[in-house]
Length: 242
Image 1 (tube, rainbow, N blue to C red):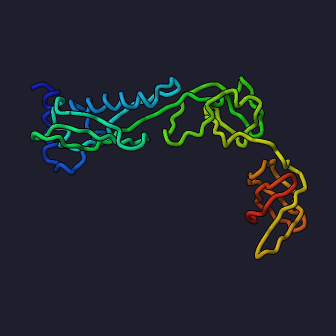
Image 2 (spheres, rainbow, N blue to C red):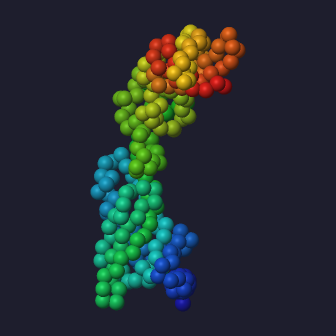
């Protein structure tokens, strides 16, 4: 008996001691055979319809599968369908023949999804204006349900960042600065409201800020630092005392 046959026998002995409700974690198995391969192939066909764009690429691997399903023959598989949303861990429903009837089981597949998006070609500092040389395209791991990355290089040219980026790091829409209405060093009215009473103190901005951005301020009078939310040009709302 060769090494592959011994490995397969050991695999099937492990599966046979599992109840039908137990899950077999396939990432602990060195050799996948038969049904796991069929399920992966069918899942790949399904996902290829979701990610037809050349901006995407992905790899699939089984996370778990019921032991009763692993023991079936390839010809017993009737269908594989997506069960829910596509995510890092994606569920599929597998229908298969069992004792003259059609049964179904759920399996989970790890989807390692990447998207080709603009990334920093070098370190970009906060407030720096981006040009074509500072941005190039690169593959970035993403969550299929959480895509807020900028995917057009043209949207970034001439824009500034609200934070620094390391080389190879992607840019989110939230990272792009809009119009700066408060600059570092500006005198600003910091508003504080409690129980219907509105108090205004004059502070100095320690950072540039756009509308709705949280930045720090300093008061010479109170010798205290504050965190405030920019409301408009020269006006911010107190958030907390630092």
